[in-house]
Amino acid sequence: MKTLLNNYLDTFKGLSREVWWLALITLINRAGTMVIPFLSLYLKESVGFSNSDVGWVMTAFGLGSVVGSWLGGKLTDTFGYYKVMATSLFLTGILFIALQHLNTFSSLCFGIFAVMAIADMFRPAMFVALSAYSKPENKTRSVTLIRLAINLGFSAGPAIGGLIITGFSYSGLFWIDGITCLLASILLLKVLNPKSAKTLDEIKVENPKSAYTDIPFLIFLGAMVLFGIVFLQYFSTMPIYYREEYQLTELAIGILLGANGFFIFVFEMPLIKWLENSSFTKSGLMAFGGILTGLSFLILNTGHWLGLLIIGMLLMTVGEMIAFPFSNAFAMQRAKRGNQGEYMALYSIAFSIAHIFGHNAGFQMVDAFGFEWTWYIITILAAFCVLMLFWLNRYMAKRKNIKIALEQQKELKKAI
Image 1 (cartoon, rainbow, N blue to C red):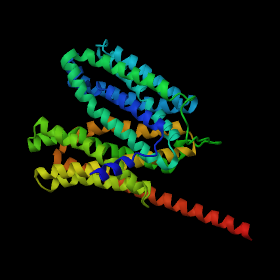
Image 2 (image 1 turned 180 degrees about the vertical axis):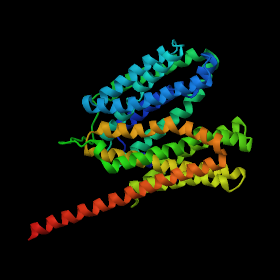
Image 3 (image 1 turned 90 degrees about the horizontal axis):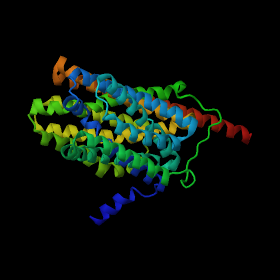
Image 4 (image 1 turned 90 degrees about the vertical axis):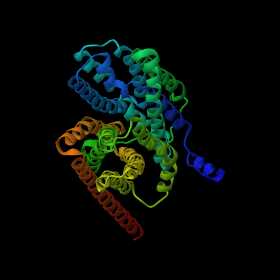
């Protein structure tokens, strides 16, 4: 047991102090955004909105995320990641506190849009900071540590949020959300100030290339949009499937979904360290993650047995554990070609787009075709994602071989 624990702890060794601080700031920030899981309930029960109104407000939520990710990338390339992260956290705290005073449909649409636009400026800046504070060989594990912080934040946030609503009403929730963002901004100013933080991988590109002209990267983004749409079904249509097809209680559904976060917390870092030391390419590993996630839906149509739900959840969890860290590492590696903020903004936007369309598309398909055909369609989307990633893997391998051949020619000419 002691050996297993030591081996587990060894997977965290070698990460810089700055990465650990960034993970703590992310944990505080993600746990602090506990209003998000309760937003639809707040709009219906406290404000009195209809389902249609709530739907439009959530659309404003997604659009704000897209704009914030794009703007964060632009500002990061102009002013640097440190200023963008600090400004985003501070202003998000102020806006969360102010949001509780909005009660009309138009003001809440604008307010939610503004909050998400400012809040998601943090994401591309954080990814660029993560790249700068990580040694090249540690980038994937650094991403995995941040993912652990995000998962812990999302796990703790709703539980704490429920207690706050019970004790202090929704008003207390907005105050706590705002204060935690402000605390995260103060901590960032204290521990990641450029005067004290150590940059381990400073990237300076003489003639930066635009991410919009990087065809392989755009193919990768298309695959990530599809993967996001597939993955998000586990947090929108899947709970309804558990309820309607298997009559599971809220507690059983919570335990099944909670198992996802538990397995990620325990197994993701050791898995990533092992895969990092393997001969597999990042695009190849992403494709494998897509295959497992697609199979997690397909297996549900093979019968009506409770064990299939557990198998499906395990397949999706392993697929997620492989696909997300390596996709993030691929994006950071590709960003060295040009404007880092622009690259990481587009990576964030890919998942914002998945949020805009994924939830609604899943519900519409369930209403129109039922769960069985919806899972077949979702599996087909996963297959398209995998095909795009396989094409990307072959393209990258071909380019690598061409580069090696050119270098060999140069060496041969020098020898002659």
